[in-house]
Length: 214
Image (cartoon, rainbow, N blue to C red; front, side, top):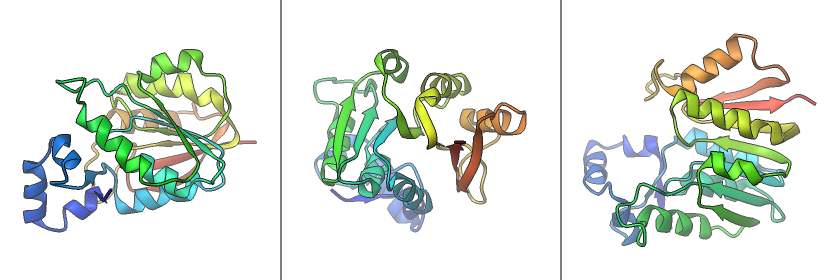
């Protein structure tokens, strides 16, 4: 399945307008538009890069599956990617075109294994017990929701593993603002002494990568 990333949509005003008119995921399902990624080309490449060599990957917040596709493209053949999303915004749950588009986008790549957890991240964390070597947080963007995802999921990241947070920093020409929940959380976490045991490994556009210190 084809997909298009956020900065590719801005290349043409006409293209951006056309995609806006076809915003509903049903349009992607029937082939009227590609799956839409909410990240940039550089962020897509970073997701693939950091997925390489990882064995247990978790993404919180899947949407149309383009970021999950990047992780699957980069991960190893024996890795497992867990995708957590309640897909609760559909007006007709039995159809749920966003879920259908995501499953097709991710399923078009056959690297490793994928496990779908259709539930809220705070519910999934209750029964979770595995070590994680890549955690990607891109779900609810409210500051308290980001903090809850971090508090509940980051302890599972093993030393040498990484946690990636999307929409967490400002960049030139970008869409994030100082009021974004992920930005506020990252500023507080990184600049006020709360990042004990973690180091900032990379910033790519709005994406930050934190590595757990061995």
